[in-house]
Image (spheres, one colour):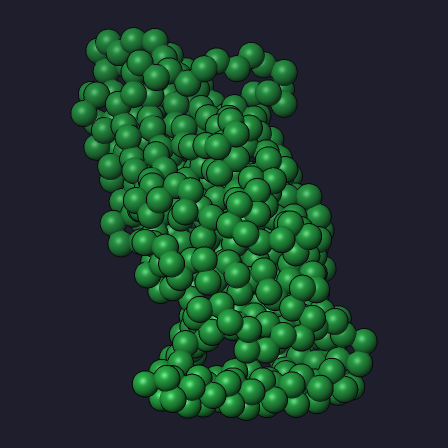
Length: 456
């Protein structure tokens, strides 16, 4: 029996050495390639028990791009639970008499990032619209004397994490986080050559500056705007003689929702006597803010459960979800919904799970900030921790699946590339891996592709 165990253990060591040697050869070829001559690499592979298979500067902290999301996704599932939901409420001030609300009509959310998203069956914009109008009609209301107020005061005023590059903010992947989000704070603009033709829906109070050129064969455009701004700039180039669709970030999501709600009410013959405002707008104008009227709530709308959001967060790499989760963790666990508090909570969470604090320097929840510095070993440790949790199936399902069944979350940002996930070999051996490379000058890089092929 002992002899059999020794033979089995020896076979496993030889097998591991073989893999390690192949990865070492591939890593040397990568780091000696022209594209990586000035690069930094952190590469770590372990088996499912945590035994190291390969380690090349696994402790080295590098900018992660979107593999940062594995830390946020696991922490939010571990902290709030997969069945956690957000809620959006409708209420009013004053009284209702003869079909008239004598005060203001309110809508308030606790930061639901999925509100109005097109991704969830039964939770699309038209579903929210139908349920809201049904609730208003049940009140018998035909007129609101006061304002339509979108109360976005649940979070603080900072909607973008510090450190995000300016040329990301106006594009869909740079959408900020508000107390009231709508349609994932994203819009599409249809452009023929360099001429703007139409939008996926009418935008609230936005004027455009257009510096586009019709040139090239691919989308090389950028949108520039900022929170609360009423001006957007688009520049760069789009192919001539062709209709292109470019996705941007909404600069004032609460106002955008309010604009659409106002139209819904009008279509039902319901009049708003005052104006459309958000609580942020009132504060900017120096006008007094009144508390959301909790005693007259007539409409409550729950989000999809957290497990469904985490799936899309990982599968489609939605940065705005990551920052929403960071603010939610901060609000729920510290009472202060700042990005700073959320990031500090995230770091403390992973330190408590045994990860060295020097290997996880977080700047946001999504990886869009180049100020995130994380090591490949820390990512593998997080993946191994997740594997032991009751919510692991939810987490695992979100990872995109490669053609050979490998589960891989990838990240790309300028000269940063990262890959992390799980793989079961043909022999049934289970592995967890992470590879992060910075200042890499190859777009597809033959040597990097060879590494990925070796992993597969």
